[in-house]
Length: 206
Image (cartoon, rainbow, N blue to C red; front, side, top):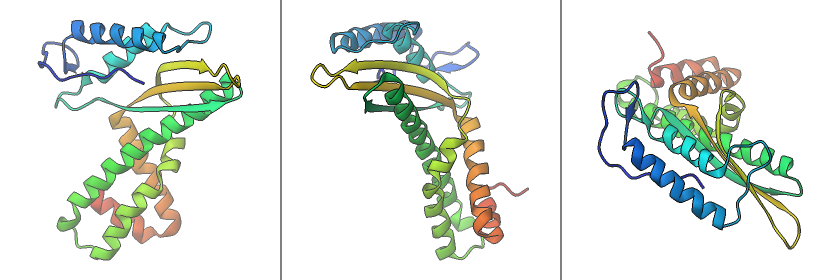
């Protein structure tokens, strides 16, 4: 449910690089907020308005690092439950797993890229790559410094069930470090040799 952004021009001269102009970000966020309100989405008392949530998410989503890569990784999810709190908890956990899955995929990609540069048995190396993805739920538990942006809900008039939509962000570099550490710790429980080979594939050995 997060606002979608289209690439335009690169804007320089700021602390963090931007993908599109701030004016366009605000315009798109307001437009998306109106659509969501018409669809019946609401926010709990004390929470920022849908427009403010969409604007915050859009600005974070638009933040690049010095190499013009996304500085933050986004996770979003919806969940349905009898109460708002229960649905929010479920959606938040799913969003964290969504982020962890993206981080695991990035780490697996790095490992695959480095396969040809390491003296590791090909079969064992491929096993390591597959294992990285299997640990995404463990990685999700280590994502503690989340930035919450979207938190809105709908109530089904037929059964009173709450549908909560959550959108969160996490600093990509921090998430990668947390992911690498947790995956390595899990692999170490299985085999010290496996963990050391992971170090080789991810370029962690000095």
